[in-house]
Length: 548
Image 1 (tube, rainbow, N blue to C red):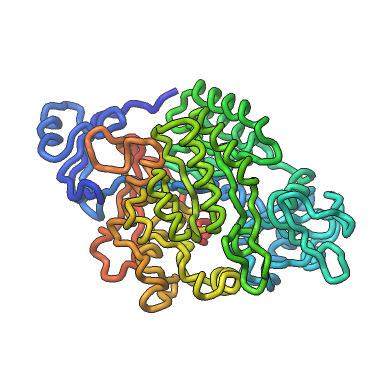
Image 2: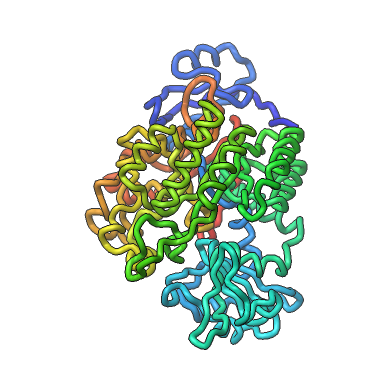
């Protein structure tokens, strides 16, 4: 299975990238850039069946990458009740009732992603959903995907009662009388529901994944790191590849669970073998995903100092530090790229200790280990990020004072510590390679929206006027580099640049990002064309679904 060859193509007009600058012409053949500038025109002159593409409007740039996302989750959100557009508890309940009424044969009502800030401390009551659907189970994921809100019927089917003990790696909040509230936090609790909930049919999953891929293409994204892949998800990707339903490129990060380690490692190696054997050019499985901690909004992000108003509460480490060291060392020795979710500063430190152990045990190699999110990073650990050659994967849309930040995050951290979050400029100043991602569907998959926030630190309402923590803003050129060349570096790809030998993955933007007077207006630019390996890709756009 391979990409269909196309005739050599000469791209001319307005071509630019943050590493090479302005380019006069690109000659593309066999999916790669064969020549640039005058050499491209000279070579093209002798090709009889040459195709030509003139970028007369807008600007051609290297295609974007998404260094951390969950495409199948995002695609499946379209299949259930439309929770994300709802801006009140009442709106969510009404939408659940509407969908349940329209689907009387559905055994389970499942959906995502509700806004945790709509209820005090992010705690939602099962009785609110009972009012909409009392007789069938309802399970809704919050937009952080670490939290679930369920109705009473779902709790009953899962056997969760007031007598249920707190699970390992999870929390079951209770009412004052000890009864279960209906909000479940982290895997140990959420898995009690997913173990009994229905699963979508394979064709539904394939449709969702293909839709997500084409929607990504509509945003100019041609490579995505799926950052949470379990065995059943592997089968969806393999079948999509067999049916040629992957119009863009995906790398799978296989989810490592401390409750099942080290038994998972042989399965990971077998999965990589199966993907390699299939040989689809748009699918790889070279990465293993670890969660070092949870999220600040749940008070499960692991911190070096306690949460505000909660002495002795430092959050949750998903892995015991010594076990994480052994697991990261093992996957590194097997040739996988470690990719570690690190929200809190303690999680960052524990992850760096694990990567240091892998380096010491296995010796130096070009491992390009990834720490994702990096919401809080202690000053001393920023130097360690640089010395260990870690790729800092950042989600730029999070670096704004939106409702989630103001209602849940800042109160848990306090103003002073909250202002140290997302230190993008500080990390770049140390020479740390920084890639950008979306964590979609947690937040919007649109790179131009991410660039707008990275360069302004402002909300969609352009607040605050000077930007939140403005010293951490990035330039437009730097932000574009983080979405292109830096993601390609994370992916071990020769891509993300307009240079000879690079993959011919391009996006055409409606305007040159450098021409805007206000960086926050970057989100007004649109993608008007996307190429993968020199071929235009048919895309599907659905802005309401991709919005944060």
